[in-house]
Image (cartoon, rainbow, N blue to C red):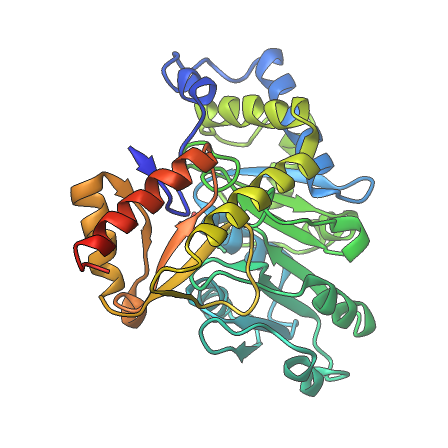
Length: 357
Ligand SMILES: *Cc1c(COP(=O)(O)O)cnc(C)c1O
């Protein structure tokens, strides 16, 4: 199997070996130490400000998006949401479900956010901002410095879904003044799905503790309290948390977050250079290192996905809805190499030689 989707992605052999082990009991000093180390390395790689905290939620990325919206915002807030695709739309839906007053900035597919988009909202009393740093559905990496400056100027609480861009693109939570950052186990962490991670700056911890959330499982104050001793309120995905631990230590040993950024940037650049003469357009104005969104000139994008899967045993990522025939995505997340890129390119060239591209 060769998997170029955007999650779950391919895991290294060491990570897969842990998945084959028995899952240990977790109310122990040993597991607490694993969790403390996970928290420490997550804070380091996110470049979180001093006294930040990390919550590990057993649930996919959306669980942490929802927990964050519920715990940091209230009906007293006024939140701006960047909606440039299906993940931005998910934040809009979460605000609707939880009665958070919100305004959406709707962007056409593949378009980046500009100062012109933000200008009308300057000085309008907004208190919160929700954005997916890499809108994975369209492969657009937003200008986080632009957003950070806007939020600082307007004293706005900034929540960043970095689920697909964490480890793939440079990010400095402290320097950007980001209040909450979210990621998940099945993207660049390259572990099985099941865990999502919320990094809270000190002011977010305060906000969470001041709000009284109406939820048992998504009570982040409770999670933070348990986390002080390296525990979770309920049984977590223990095996996945052990795999995350091994993966975080592997990244640390290989030179840390910068070196992982560089590795993924090189992998993405290698792929993009090799498709230069193929009948595709890259349909994002601002690319993340995580994924390359491609619009084929002559055939259905969904047919390419099916043919690669069925005839070449290579997975790329199809798009849904009205983009299904127009766009497919090639991910650069997980245990992939430039030799894997070559395998995909050969398959595409083979299709091209048969008039199927
Ligand atoms: C993958 C992803 C999510 C989370 O999706 P789940 O299926 O709930 O894990 C959220 N936001 C972005 C930007 C993503 O790439």
